[in-house]
Length: 75
Image 1: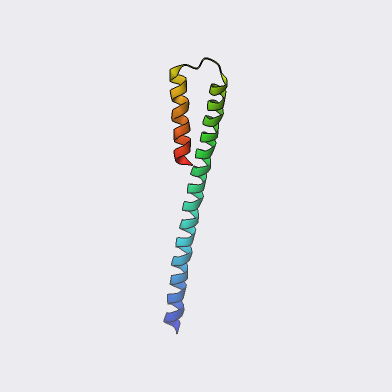
Image 2: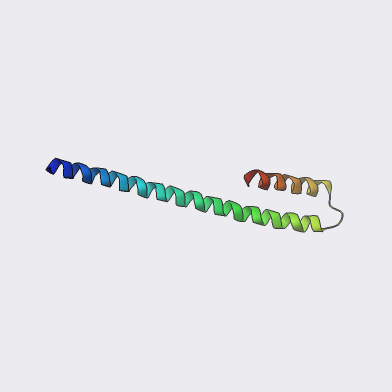
């Protein structure tokens, strides 16, 4: 009986520890994802400003296409 209680306490402790580790990992992944979304939003704003200009250079067009392709691949 006493061994069973100790065994259960150890199992619950391990489970709780793993649960906390998982929660921290999910928090980190979520933070990274939100930061990437913010970066992409800034890139999209820059693209819209660039495309609103007249007489774009070929380099600016290629840069905008590259950013659009990157954002599309991430989404």
